[in-house]
Image (tube, rainbow, N blue to C red; front, side, top):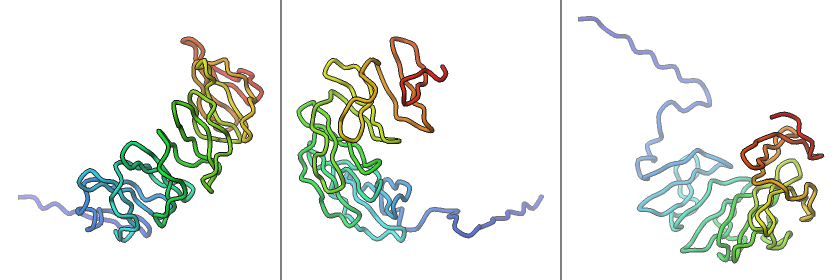
Length: 193
């Protein structure tokens, strides 16, 4: 019989095996902004790195934290909480995407707009769809469903002409018109396919 030698290397800052507290939950997400999203009995909450519940699992759904805030759903409505669990908005949104560049996409009555980290509506509900800000621009769709890009004041920087627009990364964004996908720069010039 051969003996097998098992070596386990533990590097500082790396967790090799799950924490003991993780077994208390049905689901544990990655730790972001010092908190992990957890699920227990179908409800979402948030725990710190030690497994201490910072926000009890009372929500019907929730996103991971980003920029210190998370979108959470109670019943049919979404709202935002800070990392202590304090609500920064009332639960009145039909949909919500986490903060990016200090603004978050929210929807109400099939229209999308943007709020700031104080919970104030800074770009009115006027788009049929929208995605997060990145590099100063956000993809948004007009009432006819065509996508373009808006600035932080809600002004069209790239007029809506695409069937879909993705967020900018490294000065480029993927857009689709018909079946063709290309990458554009912030001047709406095709940089490559």
